[in-house]
Amino acid sequence: MAPTAASTAPTAFAATAYVAARSRAHGPTAALWHAVELHRPASEVDGACELTLCGTLARVTLDEDWPTSARDVCVPCAALAGSGR
Image 1: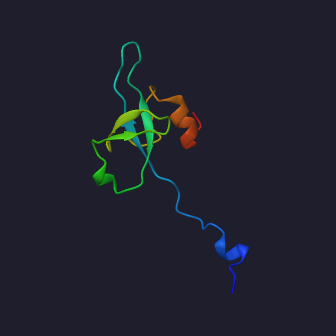
Image 2: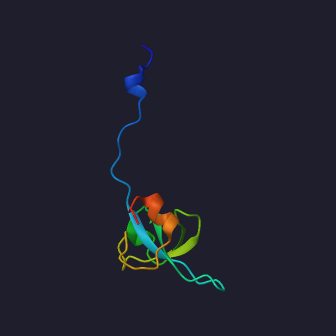
């Protein structure tokens, strides 16, 4: 029996989890808070550098929630994470 469209349709997954990450300042560019999509347990990424939603490498911190209430937030990460900034 051949699979039908209904049986091969993608299934709904749990909501995407994001964690906050802090980039380094580079010359005139200030350090910003970025969003990282979490694909493994948070304990495995705390303090590690990860690729952010906007493509920057930043150090993950579990001390700051995402979306963060900080003012120095990466606008593209906020938009891509859907936090409405």
